[in-house]
Length: 303
Image 1: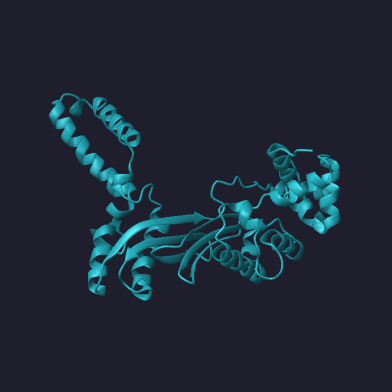
Image 2 (image 1 turned 45 degrees about the vertical axis):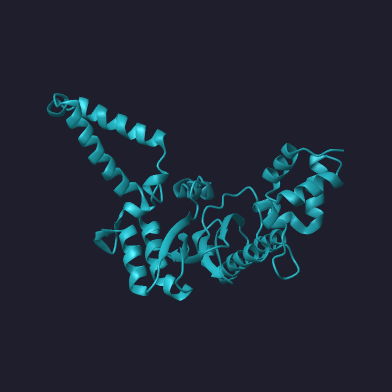
């Protein structure tokens, strides 16, 4: 019988097992959800099924360059403590290496890809669940195959940043400059890389807010429209400087923009360097964390 994507997703949400394994289980079980769960248990996935529903919002973000390919990954665990576990860190590094080796198109493809030890990434993840005893999930990844990339990992895996450049400089010369730019991205988390990326809808919304603010200010409301337009232009410049990476003040030297820093540093290194793109992963970003009430837990234990 034909297995629908909705059924596969339902089994995945119920068990925490990867899409490929869930689809296989449903096919083997002729679409019977309970039998599919039993099938997964029989394959030795019981421990990961049991833990699959637990919230994993800790872990680590990691960025590196392997054989000229820049890669950034996020792997989640339930506790910050496990994020520092040697086996967990080794697994995170292994996931990054698997991304570079297989260059997967999406997360499902990555999970079905070889990890490098005879198991798939999905199977190695399940092994980590069994060994470490927490719900562990590879959440996302990105990689650059062209240009020169520079990685930066902040606070032991809280944030991973990968910056990509077009350049005629050697990778070692780009590394220091790239790290500075990556640190800027980690600290400031800009909404856009360059002001040219700011869409018309965002600009119109900002202008609307500015005009309303002036209309509500008695001193500004009476000013001529031409003066107001000039003020809006100035405020938009400020918006770019606050929200666009290349127009931001460089954190290490506020007298220049990030764009000016890149040009100056490249010239000093004897070449050219053009910022192309970047990726910033912050661990647990967007995941709703479980709020523990320790007073309630203690009260339950005392009953």
